[in-house]
Length: 298
Length: 298
Image (cartoon, chains in turn brown, cyan):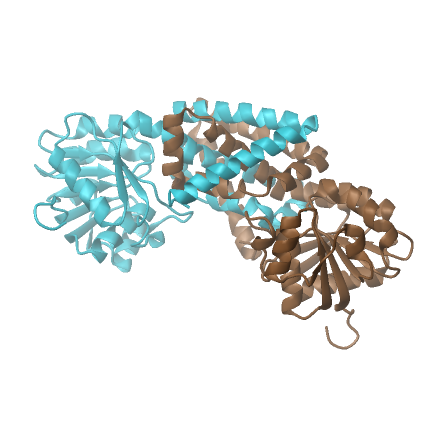
């Protein structure tokens, strides 16, 4: 970040979306003095007021278009299904030379939705900080959310290298490691590491919810046996996740198909009492855990 | 524990099995001075030596039969599939008036395997501390494991109430809440709160393991998106879990069938782009999480 590194400070940051990620990004940038001025917009008046009250934005704009006026960095941090309409609205108001980035958990659909609305001379750098908690909303944010986590950038061919370098340096300054890959590849990797786990967690919590009511009370009571970890994952923002599954349908269905085959094989091993097969499959899982610990991602 | 409460101190505790639960129980009892003498047995010589070295047992016995001789409390803490052969071995050596308990995650199968070998005048109180970590072995134990957790007892009709009261008081002294229920009911509750979550976690980790190797490396790298929680659950002891699924086959297959139907419904909603249905299912999960937080089990 010293001499000749990319410039990671900005004059005015416009945050479109003031939830967990938007607020955390603002706090993280503020903690490091990376922008002079923070303008925010959310469709919800209550969210805008809360963001002002918490103090992670200096000013709430009445529209997304107003928020981006004069901003040299625009961060789109809305559920991915809203990316297209936001881009359409802000497109004509983006300042020449400004950088637009996003934080969506799906990348190809977001690139398809946003890129057509970015005018010549504005740089679009799609991004995905692989970080989050089960909490959502403007009060859920905190400055350390991105520390030690990955941020994946998926710039399209021909994107200004200087803009990519600035966004890369920005995430590094916030404590993240940065990787760059193709948007479709990103969507496949995240389908198995994030989207499918959330889908499974939502499913099992739903299955438990539908139990006869006497059993259901005991599920809550004895949740410590493993179930509570799933409920934590399944407490994540419903609208955000709805959009993720709709936007990454193909990759999720592909991974879900593989999962379903594997589950059927385990079901069969249980039904026919094949203990050797069960033990073999279970033992292999430990090696994966060890690799994750070694990679410092646990 | 004061005047007239059940006596929770013992002269000699025999621990059959010296893994995570056995060692934690010993540490927890030692921390509270609840027994004079701790004798341990494990089939593995390395485990016996380690237990002596760590100091949670005073003496390692050469056989399970030798371990229980003269013990007034015997704790069977082995994978549930080994319960029957252990009970057969120790049965003739159990001291009159002693209490035998176990810690198995499945109860009906364990009752069926152990009870026939318990002689007249010895009291068998089947138990299941709903507590654990992803670590296993004698080094994994710690005195606080059971604090704030449930322990479920499933005594058969006609069991000496005094023995049940002593085991109840023992677990309470170790910081657990105690509930008593029918063994089959226990197995159904645990099938959904614990066994199915573990099966699902093992499956998804297995699915990721079978990916093309380039993708697999990235699964490790970007595990923070949700996958790592599953790998933690799936790092649990493979032999213990093999035995759980074999011993609780019917209840697990029943819950798995329900889960599978629910997953198919979600898959269909994704395929046909039914966002309302997805959001509705996801939103319901939050209420379950809230209940668990309120129940103090998160």
